Amino acid sequence: MRLSRYFMPVLKETPAEAQIASHRLMLRAGLIRQSSAGIYSWLPMGLKVLRRLEQIVHEEQQRAGHHPMLMPTIQSADLWKESGRYDDYGKEMLRISDRHGRDMLYGPTNEEQITDIFRRDVSSYKQLPLTLYHIQWKFRDEVRPRFGVMRGREFLMKDGYNFDLTKEDALHAYNRHMVSYLRTYERMGLKAIPMRADGGPIGGDYTHEFLVLADTGESEVFYDSAVTDLTLGERDVDFDDVAQCQALMEEFTTPYARTDETHDEAIFAEVPEERRKTARGIEVGQIFYFGTKYSEAMGANVQGTDGKNVPVHMGSHGIGVSRLVGALIEANHDENGIIWPESVAPFGVSVVNLKQGDTDTDRVCEELYAALGKAGIEVLYDDRSERAGTKFATADLIGSPWRITVGPRGLKEGVVEVTSRRSGEAETMAPDAAVGKLAEIFAGL
Ligand SMILES: Nc1ncnc2c1ncn2[C@@H]1O[C@H](COP(=O)(O)OP(=O)(O)O)[C@@H](O)[C@H]1O
Ligand SMILES: [Mg+2]
Image 1 (cartoon, helix red, strand yellow):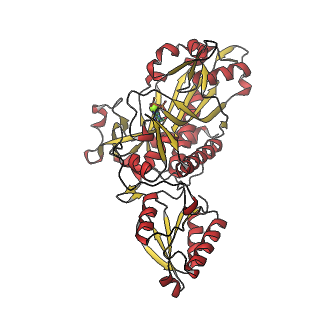
Image 2 (cartoon, helix red, strand yellow):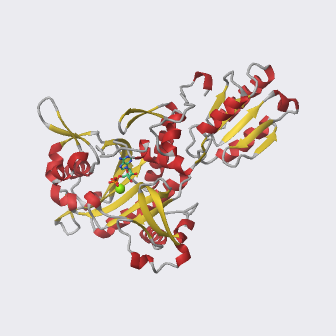
Image 3 (cartoon, helix red, strand yellow):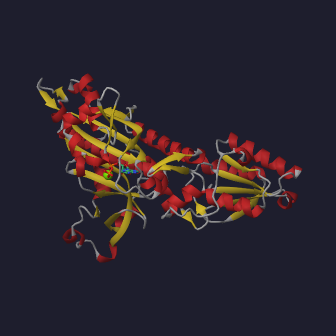
C-alpha cells in the first residue's frame, strides 16, 4: 500500500474521550472511529487487524476439528422464550419488533439458535461429537460501554458450541477448546492465562476465562507466577487424543489462577509467598461446559447407543475478537505508538523514503515494495512528500514491526537501514539482504 493513496487518518492530538492507551492509539492511528456509544466503524487498517485475528481463530478452530458456519445477527425471540432467557437476559438485550409486530432481538450470543439448528437435523449419537462455531457481531446494551472496543455494545465474537453424547465427551470438547485457545493467543503474540471463573448467566460449573495481564484490565486476578512460564509452543497436539488434551488442560490449570469472582484466600495462601501475584487482567475469552441446560429446555435429544433418547451435553466457547485488538495494543505499545506482533500487524513493514523525488531513492523503495510483496509481506510505503521526522512518527504510531529507511546517503554505500519497532535496534544492509532477512522473519507466521 502506498501511503499517499491510503485512507489512514492519523490524529496528532490525543483524543480527549479516550482513557486508556489502546483506545487512544486506535483512534490516533486511524483504526476505528466511533459511530455512537460503544459502536465503532473499522477503518481500513483496523479492519486488516481484525481480519488477521479472525484468520488465526479460523485456522486454530479448524485444526481442532470444529466447523465454521454463520448464524444471523437478528434472532427470533421465540427460541429465547423456550429457553427461559428472554426474560432473564434483561436490558443488555436489544429487543426489536418487526413490521408484523413479532418480537426479534439482536443476538448477544447464540446458544438458543444453535440448539435449534442442532435439534432439527441431528437425532443420533452417530452424528456426534459435533462442534460448530461462527465469528459474528454481537450486541449487548452494556450499562457502561468504555475503553473503545474493549467494552463495546456491538462487538465481534467467535462463539462455538459443542454437542456430545456424554458428559465425559463434552469435557473432552472443553479441554480441546482450552488447548486450541492457548495456541490461538500464542500465535497472536499474547500471553492469555486460563483462570477459574464464575458461571454467570450462561451457568455451569466448568468454566475458565482467558486473561491477558494489563493494568487497565477490568478484572482483578490472583495467580501463582509459575503459570506465566507455561507455553504450548510448537508441541504437537492430537485433538482426538483425550488423554493428551486432558493432560494439557491440567498442566495449564493446576497452578493457582483465579478471577476475583472465584478467588479463595485460603487456597491462595498455600502458594509460596514470592509466587503469589495480584494483578489486573483483560478477559479475551471464556469456555463453558453447561451440560444439558439448553438441550433439556429445548428438546435437543439424540438416540443413544441403547436406542433411548437422551438430551445432549453441551458447552459454549467464546473469543472476543474485536476486544483482542485493544488487548493486543494494551500489551504492545510505548509512548510513541503501537508495536504490533508480526503475526497480527496490518503491515509487516513500513518503507520510509527519506527523499521523495530522488531517482535512486524512489527506485530502491519501489524495488523493496515489490520484492517484499512477492515474499508475502504487506508493506506500507510512505511515499508522501513529508519531512523524515513526520514519516518516522507515523511509522512509530501505526506500529509496523519493521521499518526500512531508504535515503541517498545510505544508498551511496549501497545500504538501507532496517529497524525493529520493538527494540529500536537498527542495522544497515544491502536492499536484497533486507528482503531476505524480513522474508525469513515472516515465513511461517
Ligand atoms: N461488551 C463487550 N465488548 C467487547 N468484547 C466483549 C464484550 N463482552 C464480551 N466480550 C468478549 O467476548 C468473550 C466471550 O463473551 P462472554 O464470556 O459471553 O462475555 P461476558 O464474560 O461479558 O459474559 C469475552 O471473553 C470477551 O472477550
Ligand atoms: Mg466471559
